[in-house]
Image (cartoon, rainbow, N blue to C red; front, side, top):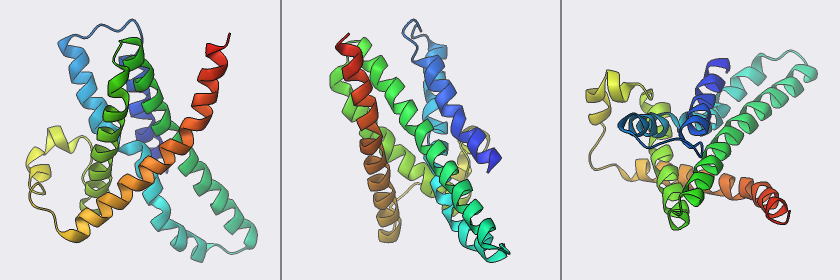
Length: 182
């Protein structure tokens, strides 16, 4: 879980650095954006660790341990989603500051789609973000016409990400309204 949380934090750190108001868009910045997009699926990927919860619960020897597991997994999911939502919020603010407000939703929907595919490749084929650079042939092997079950899983993941970020936008929108009224 610790490694997954560190990987979930990586795109947030990149987003804060890349999308700072003073950051100039150089070729290095674009390489950073590529790394951001490659690592972004790691933040919501932590939700797939739910597959380990049943095994961990069967190993638990008391009700207190089971409660502890629920708290542990709940925190893992909440932190992963907070990093994901934070990445999107930082990007939305940068697009707004750059006068590109009309691109906020298309960028966000596109990132949900990329993350859905990335989560699928990570969970089912055990590919990692760095495989895009280290083993691109492994990633390209899965490019092609997907099977219906693959599309269903990716579509479901997309819906979960969209729903989660819509839910996360409420506190962000309230914060923005308070800030605008000052």
